Length: 188
Image (tube, rainbow, N blue to C red):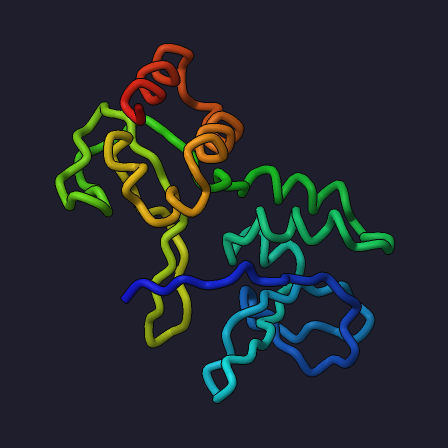
């Protein structure tokens, strides 16, 4: 089932003890080492509380596919970051597009989340973050919408047309100018 979550408040902090285990490499995160906290819903909270899954910074960016989240958390971390150049290299190599974005469909396997019709290979599609709750926790990925259907999609309605187009312009660097014009026409 699909779930709608509030934006999570991920964090970077100095490990308070040596008891937490990295979700990526499964090794202990030693005391006084910087760690990345991925905020996630707490399955054991009756009040809908949250908890953190802890990662080494590089493991979160690479193995956890959380490069965007680590990048954003680093912006507000006030202290020094050991091996920052190497961490920045890992982050850059593993960044994924910010949502929403538009791209040319590389295959015809995706279905539009509004009309349920296939998104044909070579056509433009709009990607929104899709959050699926599984027995193993919350999984995130892209869900696709036809440009002609996008204003019917709940996440796009919440943004409004002008904000949607601004976000798409900012996040869709892979589109050619011709494809961008076509996207705007199809959105309407």
